[in-house]
Image 1 (spheres, rainbow, N blue to C red):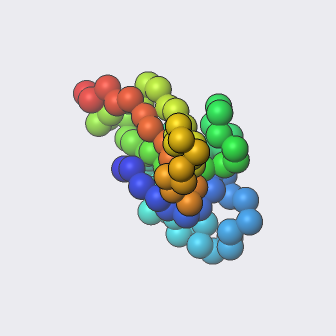
Image 2: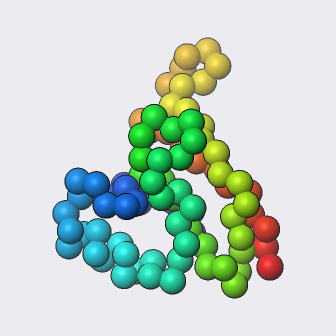
Image 3: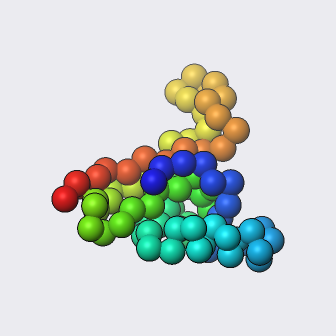
Length: 86
């Protein structure tokens, strides 16, 4: 699962009920983007999650909000991950 969930993992300031729904929906998934990622300016709201029987995420990185010419690329930083499909 790759996407912009607009929630930090582990829970930060979002409502407990909403975070509980997110947690139960992805109960069997491993979130490799939880917590503070190396090189990130804060906790991610975009996430990469997987189930170990399908894939293994072996590398995770961050794209900053601004490009090489200081142009704004997004309203928040992005993430990428390398997958090893089983």
